[in-house]
Image 1 (cartoon, rainbow, N blue to C red):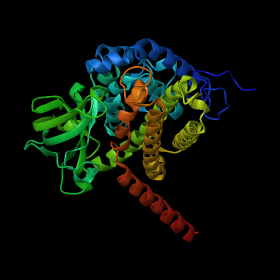
Image 2 (image 1 turned 135 degrees about the vertical axis):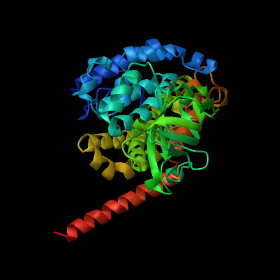
Image 3 (image 1 turned 90 degrees about the horizontal axis):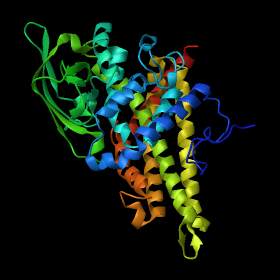
Image 4 (image 1 turned 180 degrees about the vertical axis):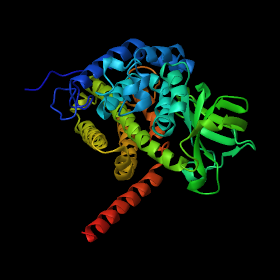
Length: 433
């Protein structure tokens, strides 16, 4: 016997476990988190999304509400919460030892459904993990109390105007002062989400010679010589996309993340969660779009029939539904594998897979956004307000799923190379038996 449905009952508008279907992945704490987040977003975010978009920003005061609600701790940590953070508020009263990758998925699924609030957290979700995974305890003890309480904010600064997806070609330099107490940073970073709102910049810098071994990661506090300016992008102003300039910025050597020369590896490991997180965004974006398109197709009449009565329209919905559910299933499989692998094995075995998942997310999202826009028609599908507004917004957001974190061509090539590498390793292991 299945449980009762939660949320929309329109086809493919919610994950199957929301609609009462059994699942091996979700338990009571996941349902409790879902219920809490949906109510919280319906109170604090959904009614205001259009207002924020018009104003060009989410109110800074909302970030403190997020801290009080316990959202910042899991957003900063991802699929597992350190037990040392149990004294901070954690959403829905979930204990650190309970939290897993599926809680992470549910949290983001509901936040994305909640509209423009997601833009508040992008810097935190990609900027905090390197601090957690690679920084020394002293630096963690100094910075985390500030960012987990909402007092200060952090972002990730990797991409450069000339390097793009080619991280190994970054040119921002960090040179030690003669007394060895500081790095002096010079260079530029571009397309940095939440940059002009942030107090800390988790930054890839070149501390050595050419190539990957010369790259390090440095946490740079906002200080003299660090300048930020908004960078308008296709998705609108809420992402707070930023151009960052470093001009002789002095950073204490204690703000080095891990060791010199480890920055490229740290960045690549961080990308795995970022790419999985892109899938979270795409799946809920698709579900929101198909929900709104279904509502319209069930009532809109054209050529003496409702849209849903026309086979060509049903064909569109069927093709969207099969792709959305396939993407959900692949995402859940990867989350499950990551739950049952060490961080090192997860990075080794699933780096290429998460790259391909990110590519598939972009392709499915693009298809769904376009088909839903066609169903709504020009009068609604291209309009930023009204019944088609969420579809229009999703359509505009698709490039942010396709390009950041690695473009399609780069990631497809990476996925194949990683798969072949694992094949060769497996064949070599067999030959030694």
